[in-house]
Each structure stands twice: as structure tokens, then as C-alpha cells.
Length: 488
Image (cartoon, rainbow, N blue to C red; front, top):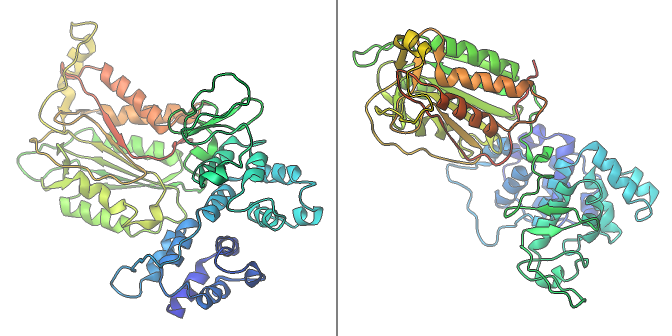
């Protein structure tokens, strides 16, 4: 592999990341050969000796695991994608599992783990362990931990963090049956009923629900999520940087053609979005009156941005629309696919695993949302200000939306229906969205973004606009909870 490219990767890696890479390589390079490695260049030499850099696949796996996908573009040796064969070395799931625990372990958890391992590891070994990876290495040397025996680690973690214990348990579930039989008596695996030496009838246990504590505490996944683990911090997207990321608002007010009217009130939406997302820790950039090509160009520019030191991306589009698309100020269409696709992990690798939020204020058809209201007469305030409502509408056509992990698409309305905008105070959807984001950010509760959007649905759905109803529609492939709080 090109030494210059390896040198550039070395320059980008921190010492803690090099230590993590060495740990991940323990199964393919002897521990002794990894001792006293001070930088990534030395590690690359060891990997070359083993023939592990003949193909970039192994190094790609390493960088993905430590979440440095931003460095993958440096591995390209020509225009072809790296070929992956059956002979390509693969990182062990055991090492990756331990690394994930290290990632999610707090300083307090590390102190607890050291305390619980007193007497099982020597005092010198414990004091010399600065990270969880160091502790894992000492446990391996002492015979307390291996790829086929994680019982000691599991027993230790369950004493102070059930979610970390769950990570080990899920790894344990995938071990061959002979390894599963080594589990302590209070564990049950797969779909087999737990064996009870008493004559009492046994109950079948779910393969994804294991009891991991003598006191009756349980860790559940998939089929049954326990309330105790549903809101643990390491189930949340990490929001640690200031700024949190970028919030881009495309605000189309003035249209050049004859078919689409100007969008009075949209400046109020832009102001509200700027205020709330700035307070949530985002840098806010507003682009006014973009043509369809301008929108595509701005999004393409954004996709090339390095998001390594940012936690999330927010894109808000305020415009006219029809089903599956929005309009530029030249009245040409930009599909929802074109809005989201530039930020998939394939195109924007530094956004991998990070939430990407899209909020679209635009009609999605020419129909109206019907509904049954408790009080049939038209509300008095609706009669007084009804003429100030407009529709962000266009004709109806079909367009599919591409989905990748960690996307959220908040639509002002369901498909085939119109959305409404007050020409003085802004759109119904965006104003309610900003109101509910503010309420959640100021609350002592840790509201998930999906809880916020549910309240937006409820409040918007209660209103009556030009004698009609409106129902927003969120779509998402988020893989964790997203909790947004004010930081400014």
C-alpha cells in the first residue's frame, strides 16, 4: 500500500486512536509485537509484515470501527473500489464488542470496574490501566477473558451498567452451543427452555431476553424492551461538540414564474428556525430564494463537508411543493431523493452514525386533509383571519424517498395533501415545530425527537385552517434516541 497515504492517515490519528487500533489487531499480530508502538506508522509496518495491508479492506474495517470513516478516501489507490475476497482478513466480533464497551464506558464505570476486579487482577496491573482497553488486556493475560469465555466480564458489568452487560450478552448469544453451556445457571439461551433441576414446569425463554442478575433485574432487547434501559444515555445519539453541527435553511419566498405565488410569512419561519436551532447549539445558515439547480449545488457542497467534529446535520426547506418534491424559485422540481441522498453514508462518510434531520414545509399534493371535529361550527378566530392562510401547493406526482440509517424526514403534511401558511406569522407546521422543540429543550424530561414530533402532529391536527385540517408526517430510520437541549 502507498506509504505516502499511510503517512497521511498516521498524521490524522490521535494517540488514543492508535492504541485502539493496536487493541483491535491483537488477534492478528502478537501482543509482544504491538508493545511500545507509538504511532500508526509503526502499526502499519507490523500489519505489512503479516500481509494485512495487501488489500485495503482490513484497514478500512479498522477505521470504520474506531469511527474514522473520514479517512477512508485516503485508501483509494485508483478509481476502482477495493476488492473483497473470502481470503480477506476480518476483524473479530469479539474485539469489536470489547471496543464498543470501551466507547460507551464512562469514567465512573471505569472506576467501578477497577474496584470490582481487585483481588482478581494485581494492584499494579489495575493502577497501570488507564482505559477499559487496558483492563481488558490485563483480564486476557490473567485468563479471565477470551473470545469464548466472557462470563467474568459479564458478571462485572452487570454490577454497575446493565446496558454494557447487554452488549456482552448479545455477543454471548452468538457463540456456538458448547460455549453457551458454560453460562452460569441463571442465564438461558436461544429458544430453548431453561433447565430446572426441580420438578417445577419450565417456561420457554426468548432468545433476546436474558436475566442477568440474581436480584431479578433483566436486560431485554427486540421483543421486550425494559423501561429501565429504554432511556439510558448510551442509547442516545452522542451530542458532545459545540457547535453540535450545521443547520441549513433553504427559504424560497419569491418565485419567478406564473404558476406559483410568492410565499408571504416564510421569513417568520426562517427567523423561528434560526432562533431555536442556534439555541440548540447549531450553526445556522439561511439561503434565500434558490433555484432548483442552486439547491442541488448547495446540497452537493454540503455533502463534501467534513463532519468529523460535528454531531448532527439539520436541513430545512421552506418552499412550494407537490408529492415527493419541492420547487426552486424557477418553478423547477427538486425531488426529496435529491435532498437526502447526498448525505447517505456512502456519499458523506463523516456523517455515518449521526442523525440527519430534514424538515420540509411544502405541500405534498392538491388534496385537502379531512377530519371530524368535536365542534362542527367554524371557530370565530378562523372566520376573522381565514383570508391570511395560503397553501404551499402544486400538482400531484409520485416520487419515492431514499432511506439510509439515521435519517429523519419531517413533512408538513401527509402525501397528496396541502399544508397551510399564515402570511403574517408563518407556516402552521414550522411554527409548531419550533414551539415544541423549545418546550422539550427547556423541560427537565429527556424527550426523544419522535416525542416532539408526535406533539407537533397532535397540535397541528387540532387546528382548522380555511375550514380544512392538516396532518404532518414524520418518516425516520433513526437508530438511537435523539435528545435536543439548549446549550446557548
